[in-house]
Amino acid sequence: MNTAHDDITGGHLRSNIGLEVLVQDVMSKDVISIQKYESIRHVANILTEKNISGLPVVDKGEKVIGIITQADILSMLGMRKGHTFKDLLKHMMGEQLPERKLGDIVGDIMTSPAATIKPNANIAEAAQIMDEKKIRRLAVVDDRNRLIGIISRADILKAVLRKLK
Image (cartoon, rainbow, N blue to C red; front, side):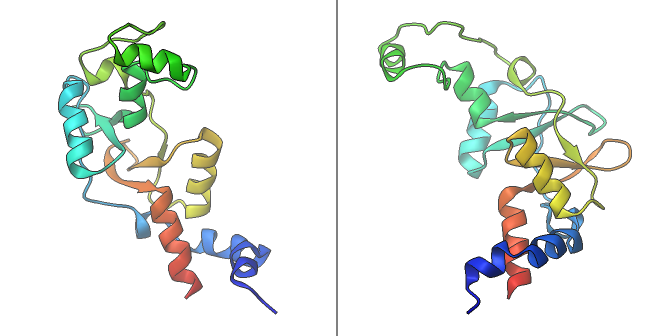
């Protein structure tokens, strides 16, 4: 008997669906981007208002130069993985955490360079890059490194599930 688990994990499915579907077919094209001189407070507001976890950072020519995520902002605030619960409690009481990275603008804390992918790549390649780099999204760029979209792990999962129907 064939189960849904077998369908999803079967070698045939893994080798074909990811190769058949292109990044351009599932990427989000209506992408909010920011520049490196934006304030971190402004970016945090965008992330929370739009319920998104990261934004590509572009220069004036729309070329991708970095990415900023909720994790980057939390890290700046001292909420790093390496800190203990006791450290976080002290921080909430007003004490500064060790190795605190302070910055007022996106350029101070963004990850640069950003991981990018071309629109004609397949989603298997996108998933592999995300897995290797332990990231949740890739900026999709044209041949001149200009932002044209973004693809997330959720976009890839939706594409795979559509193909299974």
